Length: 276
Image 1 (cartoon, one colour):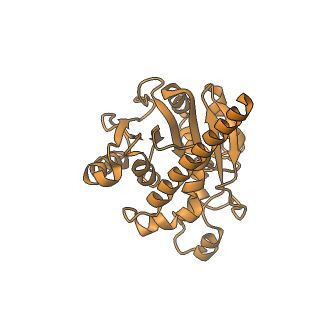
Image 2: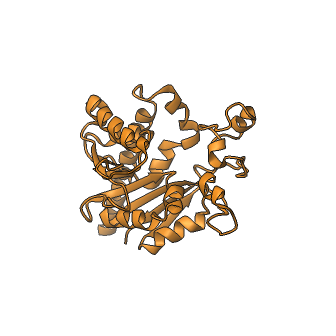
Image 3: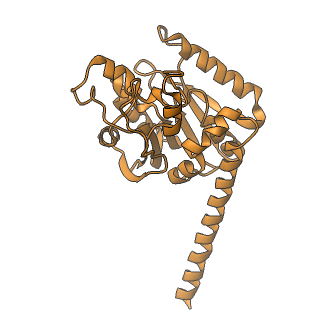
């Protein structure tokens, strides 16, 4: 009898968890396709697979989630609405108090703060933590976040020699059991392998999956799972201007434009790490 009750309880618990996950997936889909996003951003859902990616990372709507270097807020536009009622979204944007950074960084943080303030119906209680390593390198109080995410940033951190510091900051801010989710352009990097020139360092954008895994494991993360959600087998990874040859950048403008549009966005790794 007790075994039967236990089995029944487990079934209810499993069903409840599945139901909650489905509700979160629905929230993600609604945010990803919301009118608060530009038509251009919504069109990129086909390449960036936000519902599947965030489900793979295990996003719940009651989490405290930090996105490092959110750029133009492509993912922030999705994360903040999902989290605004029950959780907390935090954008780790460039620290405007750090002098001597490229001008776009100050403008980007200003635009982010303004948008958060102007759209409370979408961004709710979203916060910004200043983050410009190596001089400003903390993501918040230790063990205060459930999930830290970064999308297509690791190549820049490795190029600048700060990947270890960024990954360590992610590790420190996460609670034990917390998730570090990484999406990154995937491919050979000749500069990283010491077989290319300085120009390779500046234009590639690709990283070997093994290099990203090694960097995360070196600060204490455990690789829990990988996914091919964001893979693109059509990406040959040998483009004149690296990943920026492909959409959405199309750095060569009209040169072979149709060819690169047919390839689509870059091949990407999707990695889920956990803090023990």
